Image (tube, rainbow, N blue to C red):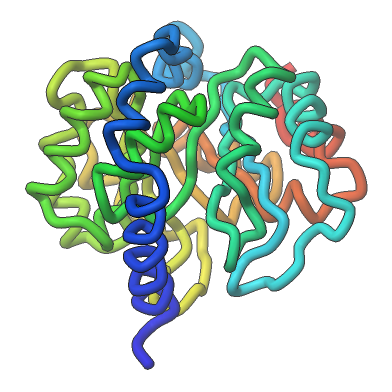
Length: 271
């Protein structure tokens, strides 16, 4: 059967093949020609002048393989608006439908409703998905090192830069961190971020302590994002004490009665 990640990736490759047959890449490239530059996701979350403050990439998702349905009353636009008012620096939007309840169309809906840049969070296995993301209005795209080879990541960083998108290059293992850390900032500084996923995608277990273990291997922590398992102001404080000022928070916020107010409480420590 393989791990949950193996199953998702096998399905994703089939989905991409169907998408290519339905909408040729040339059609996506034509759509991208008429688009304005992407919003600057990198600049929205990296602020060299405010090291004492946390910046949150707030996530919009309906469900997950590990948790099932997280939010039954799911309105991505209303949630994104609440995040914006609460002080989010950017939005992460799940676009995988089968396991996360997302849709590619949510990106444009969110982007039309709030001025924040939007990350397409999905399992990218093909450059086609970068064209797809930009054509849908995405300002940034997630690249998972556990899924892609070093060469594929470099090629996708180059393409994303050409499309004016930021890349969030995500790792979980030490091996993959060592594989990608020297490529963050390639091909140009200001276009890529390094994410440490506290969730092990092979087992779906989560611990924020994983960031604390890996952070010592990261020289430039200004571009470092801690992802998953962050549930309190104390968590954000502990991350800042380790030089990590950017956090991607999803499931915790989506489980709260009011995700926006929950985000406001998390960020209240900085007031």
